[in-house]
Amino acid sequence: MDCSATLAAPMSFGRRDETRENTVDRERALDRFLAGIERRAFRIACLALRDRAEAEDAVQDAMIRLVRGYGRHPEHQWRPLFYRILKNRITDFQRRRKVRSAVMALWPSHGSEDAAPDPVESAVDPRGSPDQVLEGEELLARIEGLLAAMSGRQREAFLLRNFEGLDIAQTALAMDCSEGSVKTHYFRAMQTLNEALGEWKK
Amino acid sequence: MNEDMRELERRSRAAFDESVESQDAATRSRLARARAKALEELRGRRASGPVLWIPAGAAAAALVAAMLWQREEGVPMSARTEAAVGAFEDLDLMAAGEDFDMLRDDEGFYAWADDQTPDGVG
Image 1 (tube, chains in turn brown, yellow):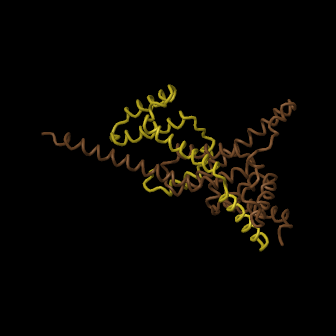
Image 2 (spheres, helix red, strand yellow; image 1 turned 120 degrees about the horizontal axis):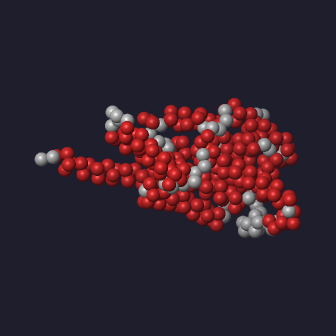
Image 3 (cartoon, one colour; image 1 turned 90 degrees about the horizontal axis):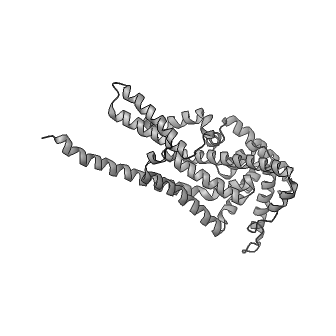
């Protein structure tokens, strides 16, 4: 009697069940990871792009690409990987915008179509205007304006280090540069902000 | 960094955290939908199987690769199968329209990633 034939089936089912279980675990882990990161990632994308719709698209693309391409990587790699993907998506949007502006400059009459204010941005805050919140929002709005004028690398270093809280090594991986470059870009960004925001000090 | 910069760092981070916490329900809901969509894609890919998504060109490349493997002697079947599955998954990524801008200049990152991964898995 060929025992291998009778044993092979249950073993392969067992292996398949185990694989399915691992995949479900991985999916749950990805869900937890994305749920924990999505709101901060969206705010960071908003600050980099200054456009909520584009920021949403960039975050969604980054989620899909992470799941599709790197879901099987170890969990501790997901965060720098996700931010590297998001950084690339943000750069894509910025490039596209430059091309669009160049094209629009040739036909200036079409430029006014996007001029309507964002109704979400201009909505009145239903919580009223407590001083502390206003101070924080005002500071953030000023930082947003200053970030837009910075080099892309300084902006990325500031957003990833200070707002997302990545350490220097993770920031270097997300930005695809050396740790020394991260330190330099971050310091310059902080210096620029500190000089420009002198009046926030009381 | 001097003390002023440290204080600015702290206050700006607090302002950012506050803005994250106060995100409106509509935004949260859209982000949750985006996450669900990303995970749905993972389930869809699992259910349909990667081979179905491979366009003709990629399938031809896979076939050539498979023929070359067949010619190698002394390679155990399990290793061949594993390699073939890996190749199909890579092709699936290409077929799904993933651009490889990110991967092009990333030797350093992937060397690091390999170091983090036990037994070269992942």
